[in-house]
Length: 301
Image (cartoon, rainbow, N blue to C red):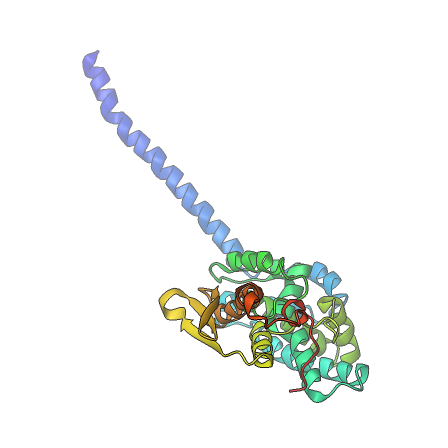
């Protein structure tokens, strides 16, 4: 009996090894199957759902599929880049035309600022998130979902626009432009049809009454009015930060590891938040409206 038991014990390990090998192979095949599904062209965006969001039915469905295909997914194949190029130009022209007739007394400077606010990356990215367009994007970009989540959380503090305080994942703005480009091509260049889609996507449209001012611009305007010297100290390479000094006194700091420009903007915003408290005893702030009002009038510069 002991001999038989010993013999049995000698055969058991190979059996277990075979079972473990088989399980490993099955897991590998499962993973390969999942990857193939993810990478294959057999799972395009749900075009019907996208058409419902846009309020437009495509004659050429391939255009819409292309509009939601990132270059990282397609490799050498078609991606949304060409449609994005078209959409960018069409959006600019549409808002130029709309504002020209809507605000006949507004000079070119304010018209330019108003157009820029309605077609910049953040405004378009907000539209993508609001309508869930990003969920249809086919891509292989690492960490894109995390960036989109951070963007969504960031804009929750600013209902209409952050004016440069939030990092925008470029792909979000791109797919809105590519959608506009696809509608423009598919509708035989009908500006009226495209404008109907644009109004739906970008609602609420920013107006002269709702446009905000960039934090750096606000800070300079405020300080120039009171003959205060402003200095930005670039610490971005050392600690991804900017400091703001006013008349040599530290007033604000902004930090952003993703983009230097945003760190600078945040420093200006922080300075504006702190400036009244820090300089309270200097009797410089008789006009408090400049500090607290984000919706100041458009500059003609």
